[in-house]
Length: 119
Length: 387
Figure 1 (cartoon, rainbow over the protein chains, first blue to last red):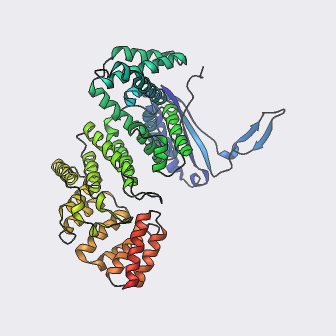
Figure 2: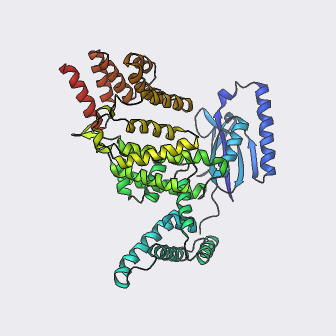
Figure 3: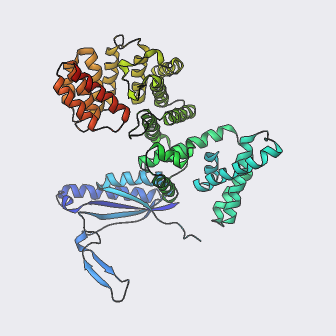
């Protein structure tokens, strides 16, 4: 079993144009999807994020940390939420990601976690 | 053999290296001790032992090591069925949709075609280091992302077979009409694509699209000797049909009939059927163009792309005349595609609009690097100014 990060990427400006009804519908389908993930044993963790404007970048590599207001990448597309799932292989992870993408109406990036540290 | 080793050790690098080492051992031993009764089995067993040694030496993860040793102990002799199955798995792994198209092509030629990295680099006109990196990166993704080494689930199979067929047809096309300015035809690629399509058909005999692709490749290949004259491309209409390979045509026609009997048409089967109509006709005039247009109508129902519409228009020109065809062609959004300009040029020439035709030939030449195709187009353009 490998753990995969499924991150949802999208344009926040475009997302702002979505109606409250559409948002309710999206929440409902994501909730159904999450229940299925748990029932099938794929669920590890998941969460939706506040807008990228609420982010702060911290650089603590040398001396006192340097703080920068805003997200790390200056772009229109930001990560809006994510799932961490457990799947036997990439085919299974891609299938789950396709369902998740349909549920949340966003593009989903699938990326494997490193397994155990190399000896 | 590499395919079998990949299944045993779930690691392409280990498998490739072990296969190479086994060959070296064979080259040293066989001249002295004679060729063993089952050379293939001998090589696989030797390679497996090497791979296990290597895994031990490197002290990789215990589980991997034990699993490999267990499989090895259970199966000293390799039944043919499993080997075939391994090649099928490897084909699906190499052509996985999570890999970039160019990586799928490179991996397929490297691991299933057995071409060397310099050969693949040469075929696709990229530097060897670029091709080596492309292959290394693809292998690293297979390992790191967990791309499985198995035949896909039934519900995914049609899509995944389609991906494999697309890779094989891409390899074939690159050989049949190369995109670069080097050799216009690369027979090693068409031959390899046909060989791989034959293997795939053996492994998946019930997929009519696989049969369709093999038939299509054979029927196109049958015309190879007639397709070039003095470094210039010769169109279907102008080819010497006595130079076509009759045995490839017979084989292709038999496969097309087999597809028709199944009755589940698809893109490759329809393209093969069109090529069967062409290879059936003693001359262009005798070609059953109504049948070709009907097949294009079926193809357009599956694939609404403007390129299909363009090719259909070429057949319409033969059936209903160049004026009707030109009206169809002019509506297509393909101004950046050389074949669109070449088709327009040909139709304009037939309508006697020489100045428009010359401009269209120029536009087509500006958009292709293939030397034989450029030769054909400039020849056509020169004929215009001569008349």
